[in-house]
Amino acid sequence: MARKSFIATVLYVSLLSSQGVHSQSNTALGAAKESDVIHVYAAPDDNTPPIGVLLPSESATPVAESQGAGGIKWYLIKIKSGAVGWIKQSDSE
Image (tube, rainbow, N blue to C red; front, top):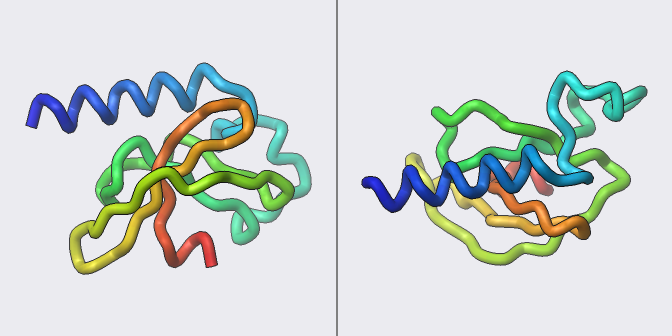
């Protein structure tokens, strides 16, 4: 359990301190509609609040995948700036 918490904290700090994954309140979201952005999470869990968003114009590389609760598939992604976080498969399609 402590390892999961540590990993989630590292991912959270990595996302917050990087360029590219934007805070949900960030003005960089501009004209992007809520339905067009992909929510990025610190852990592969729906009960974890999103820590940022990936804009439609941004790309990401899948690094790993995990099967979450309810059979939801999650992808650990890395963006060009080096930031990492989790997205749900259903959000990325």
